[in-house]
Amino acid sequence: MNTTAHHLLTTADRLLADTSVATIASRHRGAAFALRSALETAVSDALLAAPINTGGGSMRAEFLCLRSCADADIARRAKAVWGMLSVGCHYHHYELGPTAHQLRAWQAEVRTLLSFLST
Image 1 (cartoon, rainbow, N blue to C red):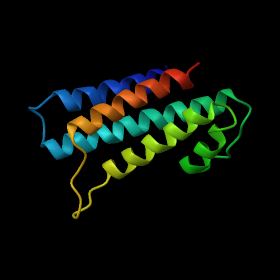
Image 2: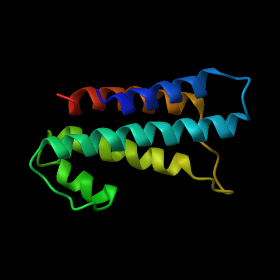
Image 3: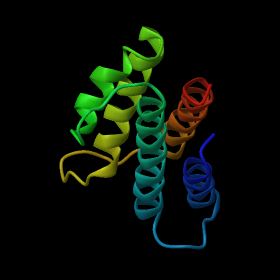
Image 4: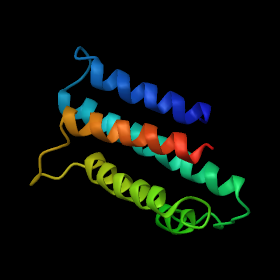
């Protein structure tokens, strides 16, 4: 696993565990950003390891290219959790933010995906 991705996972874990810092919503949103960044780092690294050049395209383009260098199920799961994390990163006045339970589930999925993508 990439050092940056590992640090981002640790940051997310600290934000979810430490109740003394900031508000719950801020910590949860920060954890979602850290998890999404860790996943994006792992996907970019997997594409760099393969002979695939996305030309600095968007993450959506990178997820499309991921299917050519990773198992289709892994690519699908990565895109799905990335989408959920993206929604969790942004404030919407008509929606509740992600819960700690949701973030822990996403964190477990990101850890699993990072282990698959780093091999």
